Image (cartoon, rainbow over all chains, first blue to last red):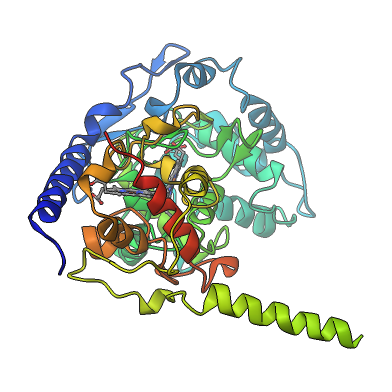
Length: 288
Length: 153
């Protein structure tokens, strides 16, 4: 090795500096302290980390957004997602399919029957022998009970409906089952969360666990929770599902994403929901 | 007709001779003690002005995404995931910078978020277009090293 005294000294100094800066990282990118109050209701945007989650504290993605973006979510008249929610509300009462039924025919008023539903998904389904996401549950109702066509994952009808159903749980703490038959799905999701993928060779944890709070180019990294989905993204100009977000993050690190609704993304969704347990459901939230 | 065949042949020889012959393939890069790669990947000096472009380019090094750099203050959005690059040339020898760029994992350990820029298929499920490709070419790496060497304090 050609490394003289000067070289190794420099090396040492460089490493020390690197670890200092990395260690101090959290200091320059804390989430902001704003409170999320919608229509007089205060939502929980920070909570104690669930057991086994290596975060000092949980913070909703809302806390990392700029005050301008945050504001759009504090007023339902300004929240651009509400157009889709209205569409969902209308579909709720619309008869479709050869059984001549609407969602309302079986469930009555969503405000009562759908309260708390979003907070507990994905949820185990004995019938399927795997977890249901809100999307697959809605489609099961459509095909089996209404005898109507299934909606596509990212269709405006599906997004409107998941936003409308999700809204009925707004403010309630996320809480999903992770034991029993869900245990192996949870474990699979956790494995995916920590697996490095793509040409950039990164895992979800690299950005959202180890570097949240810091800027990566123009983006302020959050902890990557899903309590606000489907979210209205200004960049998308519309609503998108959590699986669309997972896909985008995988593409950014130059990995081939899994498909929306795939077992892998369902497992990842379950694991992410469990990482965010205790945060309020914010559906439909607004992001940049 | 005959003339164009001959021309193609010359062009091909020219290319092989000047670009590929002396280039070290990703799997053949020799590290010294995991922290130094003393020999240029192309046998040629880097171009600092080009390196500055690759360093900032979102589709190339995108180094600025993680490393704030005063010299590039004309550009917005400097990241803070890694240390600031000001004065990096005072902290590292050229051979060490090359090692960090080629494969940061060798130098900093497997946990580092910094990508290796001259390694092939490091992560699972690498997307089609990027399979078998390094993030930057050997000459681009040398160019970025030349740029980093201008960052003194």
